[in-house]
Length: 82
Image 1 (cartoon, rainbow, N blue to C red):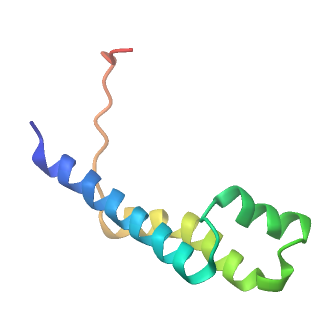
Image 2: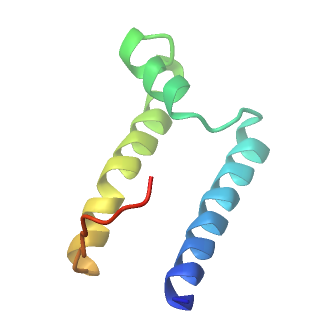
Image 3: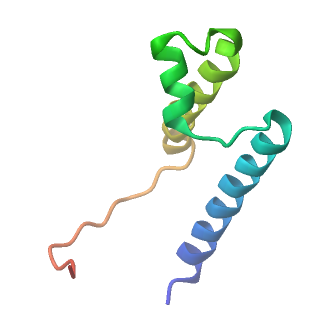
């Protein structure tokens, strides 16, 4: 069993859960990308566009920075169990 992968998954889940809880406590709204991005696209969220834009940029930009900072190799196989 690969405990490193399990711990990384647990850490990622804790980070997402903490971010969602803080967003709910601070803003009183549930953190959902469809509502946040939709408010930018259709113009209904222009009252807090900076917060929405920062969220979307962080959602897209952080994985890109993480790949540069922490490179990994992908091991793809053909024997996936479906």
